[in-house]
Image (cartoon, rainbow, N blue to C red):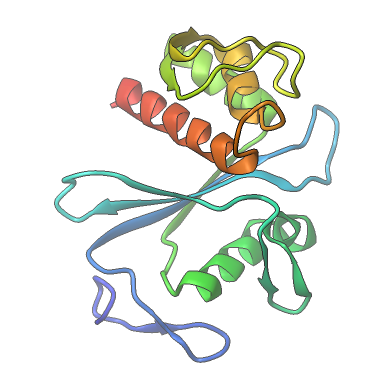
Length: 185
């Protein structure tokens, strides 16, 4: 198998990278607050769009997943971003899953809220409810929720009140991504 341009890539360990037909995007949500320069990746999603645009496939990487980070040993996957920014996180994921990442999109909390508000908010489906006392700080009902930027940030950040913690949060992040892509397209 080769990449679309006919070139095969390799990881630092010599493993073949195969992107298949289509484009792979790494979406990174930084946990940086206004005025902060150092941060970790709070959201890590690999998005694959087939060449025929027949769908969009999302893979969530839990932020606390322990993985080998090139040059740093084993650590939480979100530490790769803290150690070396997007380039090291890309290399870490490419080495981990053997898929070439073609593009990177990243944002912080403020950019996330602004992006959501720019499309007039999003309508997301929540598999389970969460209260405003959780780390997301916003009450979410089970079922459909119409959210502005501030509420959407709370929706995707909550993990402590969810049955599967960061896994459930990843599902919420995917629901938001689906909603924003649907609105934007």
